[in-house]
Every structure is written in structure tokens, then in C-alpha cells.
Image 1 (cartoon, each protein chain N blue to C red):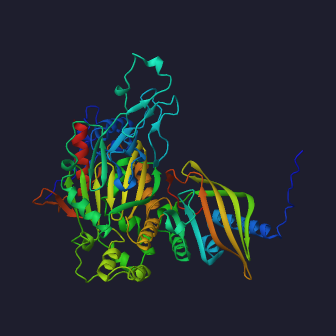
Image 2: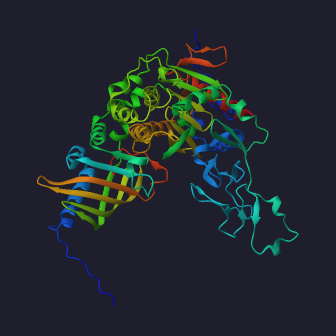
Amino acid sequence: MTTVNIPTADLTTPLGRAIAFIWQEAELLDRKDYEAWGALWADDGYYIVPIDPDATDFAATLNYAYDDARMRRLRIDRFASGFSMSAADSATTVRTVSRFALANTDGDEVEIRSAQLLAAYKRGTTTLFAGNLTHRVRFTADGPRLVQKVIRLVNSQDALNALGFLL
Amino acid sequence: MNAPLRFHPRTPDSTYADLVQDGAVDPALYTDPQIFDVEMDKIFMKTWVWVAHVSELPKAGDFRSTFVGRNPVIVVRDRQNNIHVLENRCRHRGATVCEKTKGNATGFTCPYHSWSYGLDGKLRGLPYADGYENVIEKSDLPLKSLKVGVYAGMIFASYNEEIEPLEDFLGNAKHWIDLFMKQGAGFPIKTQGEHKFSFKGNWKIQLENTTDGYHFPVVHKTFLQSVDDETSEMLSFMTDEESITRSLGNGHSVMVMVPEHVDLDVDDGTEQLQERFAHVIKALSKDYPPEQVRRIVRSLHGAGFNLNLFPNVAMSMSFFRVLRPVSVDETEIRHVALGMDGGPEIANRERMRIHEHFQGPFGFGSPDDAEAWERVQSGARAGRDVPILVNRGLNREWQDQNGDKVSHSTDETGMRGAYAMWKRMMSK
């Protein structure tokens, strides 16, 4: 008989604190509270949606999104402006993030792998966006901050529908 | 003085040609599945369709799979350096022989019964051949091969063996293709990745859009707000008289948005390089003389125009836009990013960042376009007797000596040219 060692759920460990933070992030995104979402980020952070599933050098490849602080600011402004019709009439989203694993710990930073299932409803159609996430979270005196978020959609190389929200 | 709009709605006796009238088209062109089927036969199976760029197939065995109309095809370079466009369909029972988008292969083997084909499409082998003795000749059963034409690295294919030479088909568009390629700044153009997205709408809605200057400040307001003042100024062509559109014949058209970037070899030195590219300029200046740095940086946004080639590809400022008709109300679009083959990495990366900013399902531009196009598809279902208007600028269109019809870039001259070609092909 195989012994399965299941760790105790403990939100006070680095993994647990990161999970709570990632859940908070998911909630802000589903609420489309992009200003509050923007405040979760470290200044040197990158929000990345790659196309190539094997890409690791994101700066050297074409991505769907490769947002540094400047581009995140511009994207949030665009969503908030009211003049982008894809954002003004964007899908309603419901997402769950689960299957967390601690991939790496480096000083005050942790890297967490997880799975995200997101349903996006718009004009009679519900679209599933399934993806593997990697979050790098830095624990600072002001609380946890996002240093990197990589969203690898399972169908990243297929034709996607245009998005007016954030994954 | 122009006559007021007179539109004759479709009747049971209407021919396809009747559906395209002077500056107005019947909404059935977007919504009727039967018209879509006929378009696939009379247009996509009859004309030159763009399939790939040569930089996607640098070596023998390199291939990419794509579509001509609804038909899956493989574009491949053989050992003799010839480019073939082969139907992606085994001659035995019809299975696709390649499911990868791109790669390198020594040949193609059908997964079903292992019939194997060479890079030139010839049937090389099949297992247990005794059952075929005196039944088939292998030489009779290559993968079906399309006619191939290449101009300036642009690979086109056609199912029509009788088709006119590619260069004749491109005609006055060739001059603009040559100008477009100058954004390589002395280096050959290469593709560097692509965004692929689909929208619920007819392919011609997308075809029109690339020659639609009128929508730009409306649909792309948030994009223009997100760029620096110089870029915003560069794209403010709405009231610029030098910003023109030309209908080039055979359904092709060009829309000039940045007149000073039409010919990137011409530089009077007055243009200030954009401040946002300061880090690129600094890095390039270590390896290149100032003129070359200027040449590369002026080309980062691509050529100053959108060239629309009927029916499926546009060379749009700094990228290729390729459309694939999926069904009457679904279209897939690829936005292929371009760079300098062998050129400076920092500039090629900057081009990718510019591409990400506007294009694709996450861009600041494409999602708003897609939203508008889906609204067109939804709205066009209302009112069978209400035409789609493409008559903007009929009052100021003129004919150039070379035969081009010319008007302001916000006018619908290019769309009228595309619909004239549609009418011609659908009447045959």
C-alpha cells in the first residue's frame, strides 16, 4: 500500500499565504476591480500571456501580453476609459484557481504553480479558458506583491476570441 | 452631382452580380450560407491565395500547414529548393497527413495506413503492396499539388491551372509590395511569431476593415490614448490631404496613413525620432552608423500604409494580416509579426512589443475591431432590403493615369474595388 503524504492545509506557511493572495487576485479580476488589481503588483513585475507553450525567454518571443508596469497602467486605463467597446461590453467571468504547488522559494519570493478554469459569458456564449498559472509572489513589509504572473492557456496556439478582460 | 442612393433589394431572380450595386451591397453577402459556398468555389478555388512567407521555410524539409479557402494544405520546401503547396489529404482514404502547424520533415506519412509521401508530394511507399499489384500506379497518386507563385517572398497558391501569372494578378500592387519590404532597413523581412484569433462574422467584414481609415479614431480611441504624442500624431490622418487610398485593380487596394513613411528610403531629415525609442537608438548606435540607426528606427512602425491583396492577405504597416473564411459567419485571422532577418535583436524585440500593443486577442486594437465586426454580423441580419453602404467618397474619387482610382484614406474606394472584383469573379 502506498502511503500518501498530504500536507495539512495551513494558510500561515509561505505556500498558504501565497494561495490566499492568489485567491484575492482572482476575486479582484472577476469583479473587474482593475485599480485594486494594479496595486497588487511590484513595480518590476510582469504580467505575461505567452503563445508558445515552451517559451521561457518571454522578452525574445511574441506573446499575447507582455506587460511591465507601464503597459499594465495603460491597460487598466483602457479598460476604465469607457471608450473601448470590447471592454465596455466585456464578458462576465467566473474563475477558480486550484491545484496549487510550491515550485520554488528564493529568499522572500515564492513561485507557485496552479490551475485556472475560467468561464467567460457574453451574448449567449460561455467560453472556457483553461490554463496553467505561475505566480511569483514577493513578501514585503507592505504585504505580498506580484512579481510575475504567467498564464499558459491550454489552447494558446489556436485562434482565440478577442478578450476584453484579464486572465 | 451624384444620384441619391438607389438600392434594388434581392429578389428570387437576382444574380450574384446584382447584389453588388453602386456603392451599396446586399447584406446577404454577409449572411447567406449558399453565397459563402459559391464564394469558396468561384473565388478561393479560382484565384491566387496567399499561403506563407519564404522566411517561414528557410531550409529543405521546412513546412507550414494552412488553408486555401476551406481546404487544408501544406507549404513545403523540397531538397531541390522548390516550394510546393500540397493538399493535406491522403490519396487513399482522405486523412490529413500533417497535423502540425509548422516544422521540418523528410516527408509526410498518413497515420491511418502509412502511405508515405515525399516533400514534393510523390507517393513513395505503402505497406503490404501486394493488394495493389495491377490495381494502382504509385505515380498516379501524389498529394494533389497546387500552382505556386512567389513575389518578393510572398508565396501564393492556386487551384486554378489556367490562372494568369501571379505578377499580372498583383499588377499595380507590386510597386506597394516592394515599398512595404523596405521596412527591413536593408535586411530581408522575416516573420517572428503570430497572433491568431477568430470572430463571429463574415470574411469580407475583415477584408473591408484593412482599407477602412474612417473607423480608426473611433474604434481605436483607447489605443491612440495609450501611445505617445508622436505616434498619435503620426496616425492622425483623418484630415491629412496626402493621406489617400488607391484602388489598384483586381480587388487590391492601398490606404496611406503615414505619407512620410510610404517610401522608407526617402528621408528629408526633418522627422524627429520618437523619444520612446531612446533606449533602442542608444543600443543601436554602438553597432551602426547614425544613418542606419535612423533608417531602422523610422521603420519600427513599418511602412506608412495598409496594402490589401484580394482575397486573403494584407500587408498592414508592420505585419501581415491573413484571413481564413471558416463559415459564412466565422472568420479566423492571423496577425503575423515581422522583423529584420539578421537585423539587430533589440529592434526586432521592439517590433514584437509594438505588435503585442495593438494586435491579437489581448491587444489594445484588435479586440475593439472584433467587437465592431461582430456587431456588423449581428446587425446585418436585420432588414433584407437595407444595403450595406460603401459609398463614402464617391463625390471626390478620381482616376490616376495608371488606372488607379484615388480618394481620401477615409473613403471607401478600396472596398468598392474589392466588391467589383467579387462581382467579376462571382459572375463567371
